[in-house]
Length: 591
Figure 1 (tube, rainbow, N blue to C red):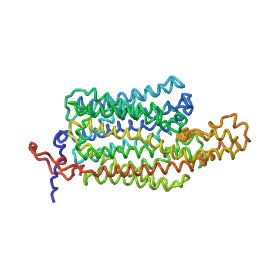
Figure 2: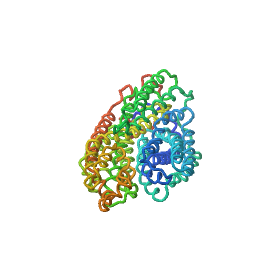
Figure 3: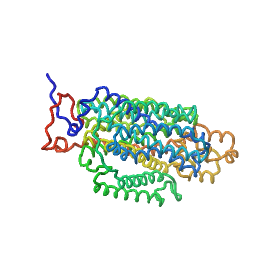
Figure 4: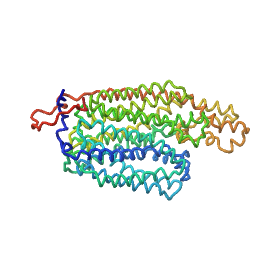
């Protein structure tokens, strides 16, 4: 039986150029943009697992009160900049050419990697060097992420778009987990190598991009929306920075949400973002076309992206703390070795993404994307429920199975969701739409740190002080010293676990340890005392965190099921008749 011709998606008709292009070009575009996306997202996480080696290399103790800001900006700077800039750079791609912006991003990313690896300063100056060049590197990474999905959408017809975006999006998400393993391995050798590794890849990708890529999409000359760019950057930066600083202790409290500067950032950032919306509604050529949100499929897809990103980002941080601070030391690993082994033990999560992502993209091309996207987040929620049932000192087989399931769910969601978003916008707005999607995804990662750390601190605050006080006094620590240490904010304990450090030695200090019996001092600073002490309170915090992740995943699944109105899904009346296209077997990705 001959294939039944399918109606093209509404916006597919607006850019038929890929039908006449060299059929090999789309695979070149997919390969290069996937490489660019992969290297950009690996660098969003490679530093996370390498922080102990980096701070040792520049001679700085990140757990000292005056150095916590360096730690936070090393963690958050790259993610914050990419969240703020991807929409602007995607819009610039719509105006000046997506390939031009993408290629410049590859070059900038490579040059900044060289600068990062050559850090000539130690101490606080060395940390500032790394933070500032990471910000510059994030600009290059934003150019790559903002335009890669749009370049692929331009190059591939609708019947193959889900598969192509699946490969690219799964590379992006898997890159954040590959960075954990790669960072652990390279940091064991030399901390500078985590930046050097980008240089040959960046040189190859840059030369290949300038030689092979060309703009095939619709480009519309327009003016830069300066007020929109300014209000968006100021508002989102203030909001996300305030959330970051909100997890630091303030005024004797365990967290800083009452800090006037944090409140100013939260309230002021929200107000400026509201002003941004008004500016965009009045701008003749807005950087953030709010009209796109009239399409319910576009709105639902981006909401699902945000919810899924917060849940996935929170999982990443909680698993690192769980493995490095508790499970690995309990199983005989030295604290300094835990970053490497945490990355290795999380490999099943990456495998799940790599298996499910391209497969889901291919299947969504044939059967529609909506149900696959919703099912993916439902599977993620199921895996969070399974992790809730694990004891703190779990059997690795069940843990590996559950994080594999989580990876499968994430891969099942990512490609169909991206296809839904990118197929719901006009051809001349694909750069902005790609930037919006990346903004929601990156902002979700930043939000996840503030939200999940706050939830975990809230969970620890109810039980950790008593457990710490009791455990220390049982080992002969004088009661006044034990009470003082137990009263310290739990966020320091979390950061210590995150960095693979044993905080007991730092908390007690050499003088107090020197006055204890040798056996007691050895017990306190050994591999068992701190993990056993924190295991119960940490599990209390995990219960709160994972229930919240379940709620977010289910909310994202519901958002994925939102359908476009009939008027949105079909060509409007009066559309100029097009030349009939060859028969297709694929379906609209928004089905």
